[in-house]
Amino acid sequence: MLGLLLRLLPFWVREPLFILVGSVFGVRIMYLAAHEQNWAAAGIGTAFLVFTAVRVHTVVRALRARRSPDQPAPAGGTVPQPLPQPPPGLPATPKKEPNAWGQAFAAVALFGALAAAVWVAPHMTADGDDNTPAPASCSGSEHGKLPKAYARTPKAATGDELCEALNRPDLAELMGTPDERATSATGTSGTSALTNGKVAEPEAQVEFDTYTVNLSATYNKLSVAQYVKMMKTGGENNRTDTILGRPAVFSSDPTMKIEINLGGKDSSGPVEAGPLARTLTVALDRKDAGGYYDITVWSESGALPDDGVLLDIAEEVLPTIPGRAAR
Figure: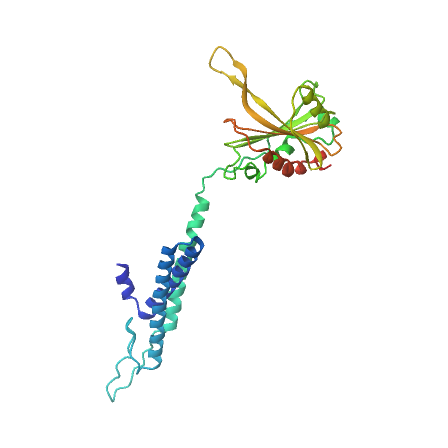
């Protein structure tokens, strides 16, 4: 049906359409073939270009025939013939022939607009029909007045600030799972346990399908060097390192798992050991004058990333925390 319609079109409309279609598809297919190294596609693209070259040759011959009527018409199509001359004695009635160049230009413009619409429509539709959920946001994660410990520690970051620093667009890539998106991101401005609310301890947590990343800051007087000595006293010999010029230490501890039963007699179950978590503790500043950051990663499956992942997160996240992180 389409072939019949094309055959019914005037020569100066049909041939430019053939040339435009063949050149656009030929060049596009050849580009994709070269990019993907697909020889079958290269053959198809070559066929389109050869077809286009034949049609160009036909149009060139037709143009020469119009300028020199003595030359034979091209075999690829029917060229409009000169109108018959009126009998002698009758005045010739001039009849304006259609402008071949105008027809060709109109055909090319029309098909170009259609081709552009077909080319752009899938991209616009893909953007509109994208049902992929947006990454989790930290905005408005906490409200209300901060504990008094934050007033006594002017350079202490809040939970919101830690969340904004941790919930980076490239956090999944730093974790080694670039295709995942954060499902939740929270920040809380709390205080350290057993300090009667006197030590500020904000924290932030970003969850993915595979891993959960937690960042906390403890603004006390305990240095990382003292913390390492305490672990050695307890029989632990953990790996130490230096991050951003600050002392750091790795440690592994199980997370805590609490089951809450809302429908039974007991309101909650016993506290159980959850999956193993890997923590990188980094001093707040290079002097290690007291206080530290904890970057902790765990997964429900128990799998842990390499220590290099924690180092990468620390190097990217810690400098972006306001306050003492810049020191």
